[in-house]
Image 1 (cartoon, helix red, strand yellow):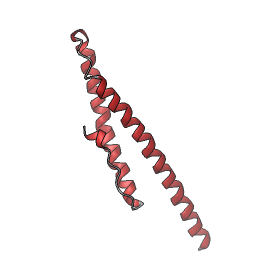
Image 2 (image 1 turned 120 degrees about the vertical axis):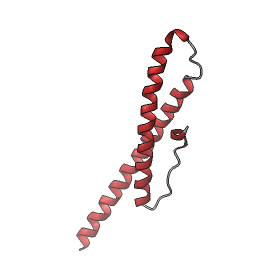
Image 3 (image 1 turned 90 degrees about the vertical axis):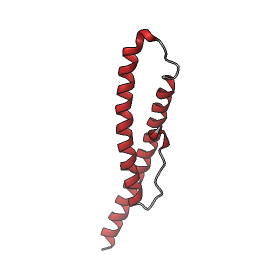
Image 4 (image 1 turned 120 degrees about the horizontal axis):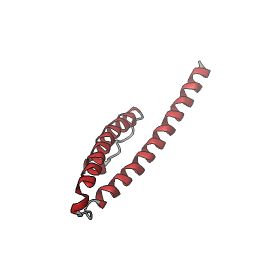
Length: 92
């Protein structure tokens, strides 16, 4: 019984570390997306509008996937009894 408890604790700690790493990497990715979104405020070249439009469409898909990832991470945080991380950049 002691061995099973020890193994469960080890797995819990490993999962917790993986979740912390995933949150950090996801936060970094959101910062990258935010910078990319901000860069479109300065792009006004009409000649490149088709290219810019396809980039924006691709970024919109990435942000949609990021919203799903944020929900998943929040569900995992609940398993540990942690407060849900607020990923405000995903909602913008």
